[in-house]
Length: 506
Image (cartoon, rainbow, N blue to C red; front, side):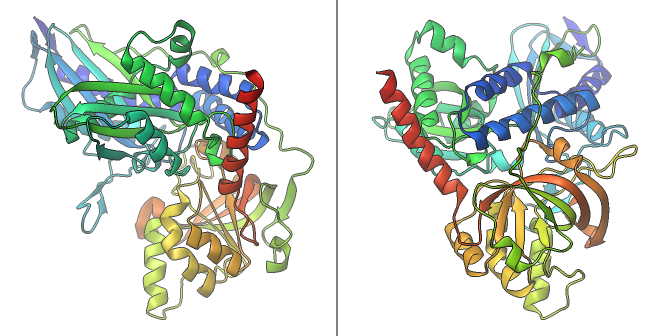
């Protein structure tokens, strides 16, 4: 029998969450590097390059890979021959205590994103607890832990279906993914759970995302069972959609497909699809009673040597002198380097702005001829101006956009992923623009921010309105003032190109 010290478990949870906040799993880094080498789309290649440079910077600086430091999901498998040294805390409480300590670490504070009363007041719990904990009893005398920090953008793209027994899982996955957009921040992994019951299929899918990236090994040796055949089919068909990195069109949309399955009722076929974003974060460890887990950090030499080059054609823009006429010259797909002042605002700030505009109240900041950046940054440490500050999913602000353009005089918005059709039409109507920053490059983006201060709604914490002063912040014109949309055009072009490349191989 092994005696597991409560303190060792809590310390291991704390260390693991800090560890995964700045270290990508190396198998994922290698998969991204392979995708970068294969990529033929300039826009997608640049996006992957930013992700890889950001990954190395985070590993070197011990700062978060993404400003969304996630909701903690922890699978705890406890051996039947294990005893705890104390019983005053449950496993849930121990995971929560480790989470609380990790997210309040003074050297690397992580953004607290968990809100209580989700159907009502949605008040931030301030310490990112409670965690989501799944507990299993297994044979043996060890405690096995798989822990992840899952970003909201990819988690929000989870889909579930109760298929007919004769329905094709691959058809459903491909059709579903083609409609997801890019808010889950590709390229990433797909976790698929099949069987059991509806809720069990979701747990199966989430746990599958803890597995290592090994699709290339499977391709090389070939499938040995139906489940592996399904992995290969989905991998090939999804990448042929041409969605590409950040949804801009390209060869790699996913780097792996994971499947967990269980027997199910003869009349049922429950299936859940959960994508993992470019900020894939998880680690596994065991406790045997000999002390806390020892997590071996990777070597910086394990990262590919990639440099960023925006090209000579990038448009230099001074945000402080920009006019509505200026932005009508910008074209879809163009790289723009922003310098000057911009304002931030995301879900809670937009909700409050709408309430004030509806009441005819004066806003606390003037948005006229400004850009608004959809971001909730991590708190700074040391001499940082701001912590990692990558974009959040822009579609969540779609319902506010027409009013913002109509009544505040903003010139445009900066976020990640696509905009809805009505929002694109509103952007064109108001001769505005939507610019896309790369999701999964939050630490890299933060280095372009030279000054930061809260200018409104301070009580909203990370969702307050900040004024950033930026220098050469790289963005892509995703929707120009005519309504040309890179997230429609890019994947459409690359789906055709991929089909042509396949035809040439035959």
